[in-house]
Amino acid sequence: MNPNSSPENSANHPHLTAAEYAQWQINLAEASRNNIWCHCRACAREWVASSTTETCTCGSPNIQYVHCWMFPDD
Image 1: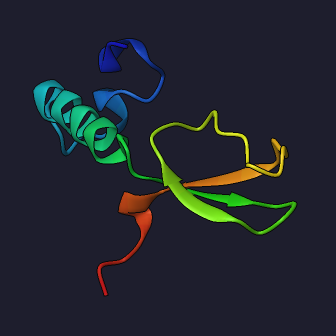
Image 2 (image 1 turned 180 degrees about the vertical axis):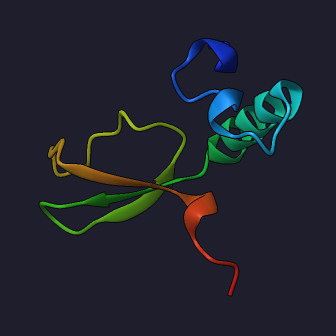
């Protein structure tokens, strides 16, 4: 998707140029690839996946997804 075609574009981030904003969106997408922490709300199983379309091995589709880049680097 073209970042400038979304409602959340560089106009909403005046400290970034359109090119910087586009690169920021690319960097976020790359950071998310293969790095999504999944937590099953039914059985509490946890795993790391590459998409937010996972179903747990227990069969539950009730999954919490958190992009791993959102965790602090403690």
